[in-house]
Image: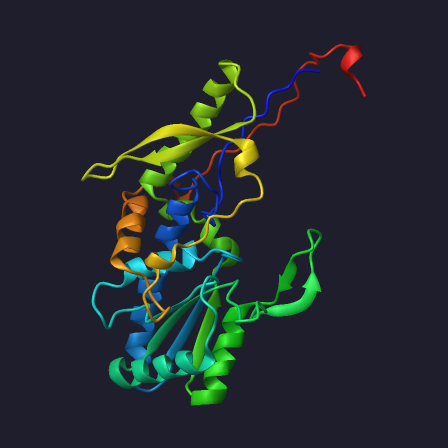
Length: 289
């Protein structure tokens, strides 16, 4: 029977093609940058006598957009994050250790943000647990402790590590207002596309070429979107492979703009809950399987 398929884009990994940004990413980017800055202040306060290296692991199996967002926390050269490890850049242990040691010697501590998909030159994940999931993807065992232990073994620094995991994509309390607005906009556009009779399309977010950040809704055919990953452009990553460039910052910064706090009650955020009430049957027996 006739059916329309309208794909509403969403992925915190920001790896969908043909859309300037994927709804969900702006808020994860904001959470990542804020968390990196706050954790760095904590490490800085104790580095003289205790922890000298902090490793923060974020999502991103093949694309380093979330890890890159942590770079927004850096305002001055000595600010955290001091190193970012991207899936797009092969991990060079010698260069990494040299940078970590130099940072600790200069700043007193070192904050590292690593994407879960960080890998060696041969494509092996640093966190390869040796298993595969239902989709045939390598099961990753957590790269933060791998990196932290590597630093301990090579340089002897005391460390701490953290894995953002579900927290980074569930942190509605610190959502980006820009992201929330875009999420509603693509959802609305999807309904409008369906009503207009369109099929097999995805509403997209198109960045306008204006001095002040602005955007509009476009569309892309699903057949061109499926099974395609948008990775970090090399021009967004510094020459040494451990940071973001000004062009990356120019792309990322507007996406975390503004706050969209949920209502609070008794000190805790309140979220809408679906009633999930049954509705009367609408299809006749001809459509039953």
